Amino acid sequence: MVYRVHFTVEDLMRTRVAQPSPLMELSAAVRMVQSRSHPIRFGAWRRAALADLDPKARMVLDLIPPGGWAPTFLSSAAIGSPHELLERARATPRSQIREDLAHVAEHQPLPSWAHHLADDSRLQRQLYDSLDHIYAVLLSPHWAHIVGEAAADHALRMRQLLTGGVEALLTSIDPRRIRWQVPVLEVAMLSGFDGDLHLDGRGLLLVPSVFGVDTPSLDIDAEPQPVVRYPVGHGQLSSSPTMFATPAQPTPPRPLASLMGKTRAAVLDAIVKHPSCSTKELAALTGMTSPSASEHATTLRAAGLIRTVRHRNTALHSPTTLGVTLLNTTPQ
Image (cartoon, rainbow, N blue to C red; front, side, top):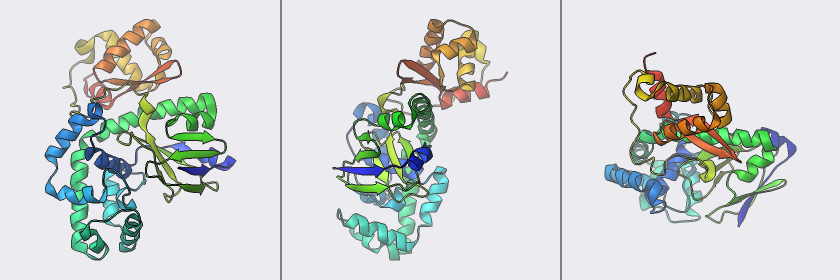
């Protein structure tokens, strides 16, 4: 069972890759914290999160179960800052709450209190307080890392677009569950969601997700264009699988060359100033051989200062948030 997204030439021209959607990513994190999947990558994060969640988190957990449907106003694909989107959720009209919950109820039972949510302002405040708490525990400490992962993914997608066009981009975003059969993008949904979407010139917004690793997500009602969420990097990002164990802490400011050596400091500086540069480009920027540039990049990656993605046979290097912070806070 697949959902078929139909493209025209205008749709291909208007398809683009965006930054993570905060509420969509939060919804994926809520599902992940309730599951037991991916214990190596998310196990430490899951244990820490469950220990920090208050009982008030239960309201959101009940509306966004490990599998199945979730109300759109809690999992919107809208783009913006996390706090902006959380405030926008609080302003959801009662009519939309009622409509979203009715849609979910067609597929799965709702918690008893949810039947009164649209008409009970006290329940709404409790739910949004629950959402704020969930965000503070699950996502806020890691949001900079999530944005960094998405930036590395964006570099990979742009290389695909430049070398192979939109077809290469659509073919590669998630080959397990997303297939490009010209002119239709077939999205296999775990929910069994089936149907046809004609973009009619609006194009498609592709949104990478760190927590949505198991299945793509499709929001056909998103404005100004429908959204497909796909797993960030599709396993091609060379970051630590246990990155979510603890939030990265910036290194105390010290003269960078003394801290890590003049050559390695120059390599980090070049990567920060030229994100998504290849190893060959990095060598040219720093005046060293490609093997030496690769060796220094490996050390910086092991220290969490850069991340590397592969596009075909080319390694592309971009700074992590920690790497940028280290460079920007070090006295010159």
